[in-house]
Image 1 (tube, rainbow, N blue to C red):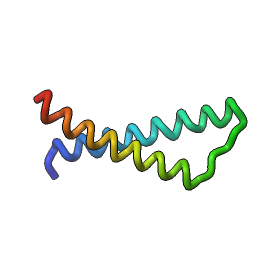
Image 2 (image 1 turned 135 degrees about the vertical axis):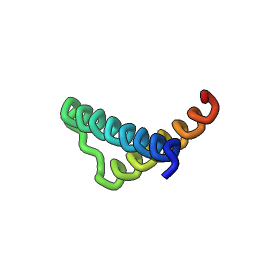
Image 3 (image 1 turned 60 degrees about the horizontal axis):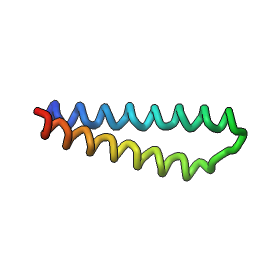
Length: 62
């Protein structure tokens, strides 16, 4: 696998996990609970967005 693709996918996973941790903290603090489908959907959007942004930025900055 191309290292550029591998790095972008790993940053996507990191972004997704960071989002889920922040969402869990918000739910614990506020007491409001989001539906599981909303959590999964937004987490996947964050992962795709972070991966895409990292891939593009790596090409521009390198």
